[in-house]
Image (tube, rainbow, N blue to C red; front, side):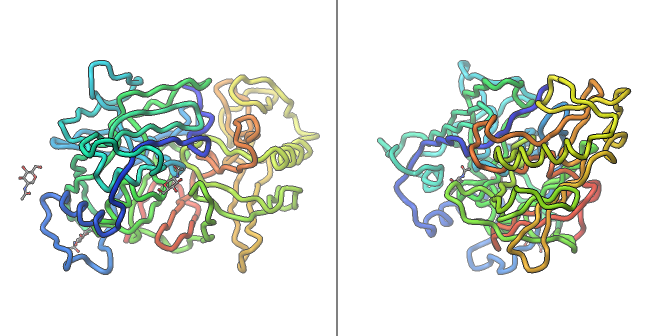
Length: 423
Ligand SMILES: *[C@@H]1O[C@H](CO)[C@@H](O)[C@H](O)[C@H]1NC(C)=O
Ligand SMILES: *[C@@H]1O[C@H](CO)[C@@H](O)[C@H](O)[C@H]1NC(C)=O
Ligand SMILES: CC(=O)N[C@H]1CO[C@H](CO)[C@@H](O)[C@@H]1O
């Protein structure tokens, strides 16, 4: 398998659909009707949200290039492996909606809809962005969506509702009915094979997201935590009662595309300042690699090259990534070579207490099947990202990263991702 260049809709996410009713009151009211097998009434909604949800995570940077969560949907529940994407909003699964459905190869059977499509007059349909230009022609039209990712993948389909069996960390089990996309036309034209998953778990902060729907029911707070272990395992949680001590926090920046953006940061390499200063960075778990704007990229590359003079490493064409080095003998793992590289640090210049995001060499390098070591930081210009700086999976590994949409803060702490924190 190859790697995705990136999977995020800062390029044109075009999602069509629309609606009439946009009041929050109507939304939560209508949402409450869909909470089945659950007798909580509005007056019983807790002020303090009780509990969290934890999902197992699998994946790697190389050779697969993605991390996925295993989520169950329907009755009887069936598993779906969903690509964890904090860079997009919509959760969708491949869907056997028609015999003509265009599905990609996937690990599990496609979802089978059962006349459970949302009408376009459904308030939730209005939150599938952008809520303009595509008026609901007839109130009983279905709620269509179309999403395009930066890695040349796309999904087209219809929003449906079904139950999600969920066991909370306090032991309670609920089957809330949530809206998600039933994707019956997936295309992928990137240079690498598409991720081998059943769909995408869109964790951007939108009212249409699965997490916002759970929040609307009063079941969890709008807080996401992910931990991607470099050993191929990890976990994802929703809610705020599993936050370990020691998290370092930085405020989210407002940005028009509503990505999880932080900054400004200065890049330090081996403790030395670089010309890359005042950058804003997007945390995007849907991107395999980290991307820097051309100027910052060139600065980092030349500082790495300088530290490699006098080492046995020489530049080599590897075919996997643009910048690779070989040693006298092939490297078996990153441990064999990481001491030749220096840590990279994102230093938050406006923070009062020296907040920093550390990238050890293993957070920006990988060893390929040919035994070469390659740079997992890419030039954003080559991916048509313009000046955007994207922190992708390679640099998010072996950290617990928390996106607190309630407080608009992002936090992180080193972790091997083997142990789910206790409440
Ligand atoms: C457990 O957590 C759920 C979800 O947050 C909450 O609705 C429920 O009241 C909690 N149960 C107990 C016994 O606290
Ligand atoms: C996510 O949804 C929000 C709110 O609906 C919207 O402003 C934003 O553009 C969306 N972000 C992405 C990456 O699609
Ligand atoms: C009380 C109630 O709503 N029970 C429902 C729980 O969910 C099952 C399966 O979705 C329904 O068959 C029950 O009627």
